[in-house]
Image (cartoon, rainbow, N blue to C red; front, side, top):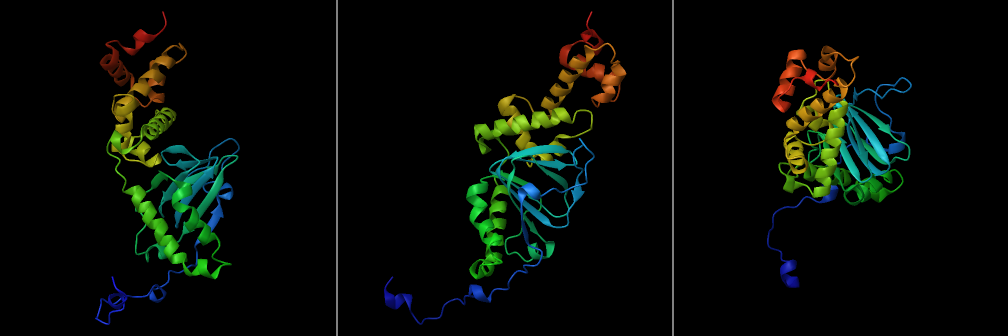
Length: 286
């Protein structure tokens, strides 16, 4: 393009300068250190925190250590390089474990409603904390003492929102959607959480929400690493736990059935017959 063309006086589509854009309200936007972000009902000694609803949007970036995120359906640990977005109105609790580091960005609903790029409507869990969010969070942290950072705060929040939308929109319907190591991590997290939640009536959808994925994502990970659906893996875990409890003669069949979420002894026996061809009683030691 020649200089004359670049400066052509011919009419062009009107452009609105960035300085002329409506500015997002900065009131209520807070950036906190992760190790001091303890949200949820106060625990009794030795007990986990209980989930409580927040009225603002919460973006958590873990740069070191582990954050334990407690949802109504169970607790999940998120390690270094994790990004977790929890939309306003979600019940959750946080427990930064010793050595945890990172940032927590709290965004009021009123501010989020004026974003050109809306925040995701559901919880989002992803990786890439250092690459995707470092510069934007650093600029927001510096905005109170840096006029340039303050002037670009609205743009920074929208860049964060766009990055979250990309994470939320990433395909999660097959094993090919995740690298092998990531599906292994998801599978391990699922089996650990499902094992802890046996007998509490949790569904695959409940556990998927707690892990920040979809039921299709859990199915893909389970089929990749176990060759079975997520629901089948849950059934396997429950039967394995039942076999372990049957070794103890002090545990009645009714107690085992109740503790593991079966509707009764008949249900327990039907599950064993379908899986092994024998009743649960047959697994008692001689």
